[in-house]
Image (tube, rainbow, N blue to C red; front, side, top):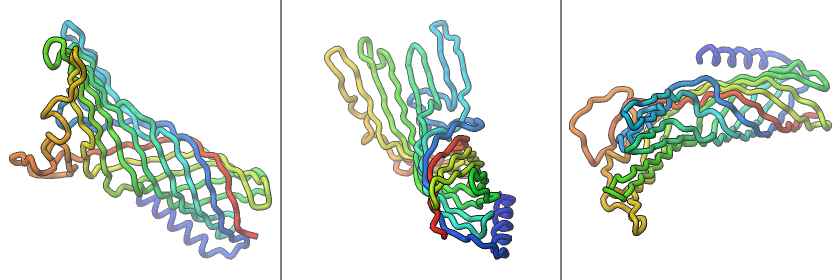
Length: 300
């Protein structure tokens, strides 16, 4: 990260020292899609152990007691995105940008269990706004003009959403199945990644260009806290569905609905009225994809 910052500062200093013409402001807007890039272990979706899902695994338990265990690795960096970027060209070849990127991630299975006693699944997705200060480099060709940009990627707002479901046949006795549904939101600490792109622009008017680019991002988001926002236990009986008394969100103590991620902490007697401290987790939001859109220049 220090090397990226040094490169940005060096290029900005070179740009400031040049007196070439064609300084101009511009705005760029567009959208695109990202695929996953790389893979790591997913977050623990159930610190309370209610769904029996083991972190980042897909487990199938056979009637004879044997089990097939599959590791689930990946990122939450795939999904649709939209962006608006404001830029300034110091000269025909070097510019600086400040981009605002909205990201709506694809839902990804991060844990699963299928056994004679319970079927459970946890899915997660990211939604948020990132800020990207970057440098912009181009040879300034008159028609099909290639460019490169590289900069920092800073999550400014957003959350990790985790939806969990569990279903236990005869969990409430013979003929009474039990289902659990939970929704959790995870807040992040300040995190910084980096992103870059290679693309081309093409003029369709005196000040208007279309662009297309391939973009990569490397981002790991540090978790700060988590809260179970929804929790519901339902009994499915022959006479109808019934919410199970004492097993709803309002019935859970604070240390089972609120969690604080810490790099280091002292574990003592649990306090039902305080958030539970658990080890720090990271959300891998890396990806590679494409953007298309238009660029409008305000120069002469």
